[in-house]
Length: 122
Length: 346
Ligand SMILES: [Cu+2]
Image 1: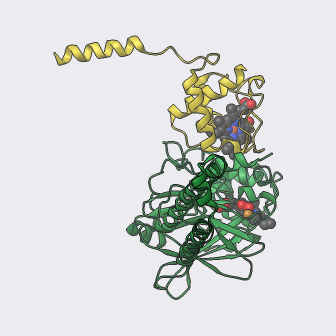
Image 2: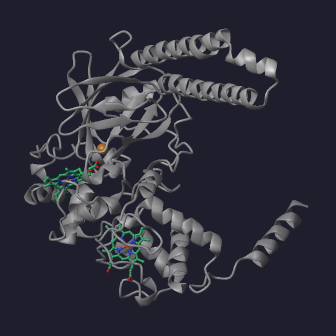
Image 3: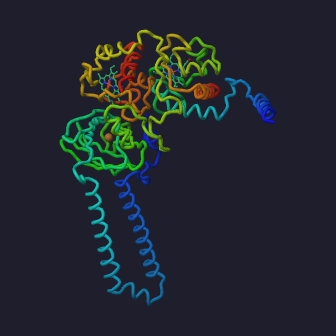
């Protein structure tokens, strides 16, 4: 009985597994969470974002035109997974990157990536 | 440009939580405010009624309203009684907010600077036990006396959840009692225009359970209490507030020992004090415990390695006009090393 229930649950979860996130069609809820995370972690201390009036720091590149930047930080293919890894721990994703690791969990980092890709699509 | 809405958003959103008292001294003010509001409504209603009677009432009522008795009661007696009552209430309440009850309450000296706060925790003999900045820690459930002063111009101390505003005047010490009855974080802000980035001069008050407070004062580490629904900076995402040690430290130049030398070499020590090092400057906030603070830049940014580096690189972009220069000329690796070292100063 229990085994059947577990098998069914497993089948259900695989059936409902979302498609891998796409950089062109980010999930709206993830975008909203990502935006709030960007505000709360203080990414604005180094970057300008188009929809965050303040702060707009200058230690990093402006992300207002992030969609035109090409590869992430000049080297990484601009995929959701790469972007999430980069915003969470840039020096590991791109050795030598001057952007410091930021206090985000992997899940939060993928929300932030969705937010950034949402900017890019405008 | 930074407008007031953004700045308020940084602390509480609009309006400030003036109707959500977290302690007796804010509570008494809230009660008085509601009483004034209710009286205002009653008086307005009486006046409206009197106007109605005077214009459209039956002649007998009109005559009564214009009579000597009505004028003496409504025009002289009522205002005299109500206003005297309110005056006595207001004055005793104001006095109760400022005079120490026993003289044995914990004392904290808060000195305002353009545009940050110097905070000194005093022992019974008035000696400084712990020096910090831009953050105020309180024990829950007992009154604390604040000695408020200023190093330059007039500022005003205001934590809406805990008390009314109190001016901070150069050359004078104003006393203010605060008490928090529940643990939590409460945003504070300078409430008297003091020039330049005045709108970005805030701080966070953290109320601890008494045992935690004693531990904190003795230099121990305590969690900063449950984040209440109120948004204050430093309310970080669910994950670790701080970048885990080891993460992102692949660069050998970023060893914390270098940070101290670079801090001195780049002249930071001229303005900042870090106890136990040769850094002894007084023009900026004490950084001895900067790693344990919730915020940076006087309550405006969450505190983590990223915001620390962003602040050091270009504090002028984040808080225009503040008295710390921008350091775009220092190599990013040096700033990273300094930030790593500062982050370890708890
Ligand atoms: Cu001010």
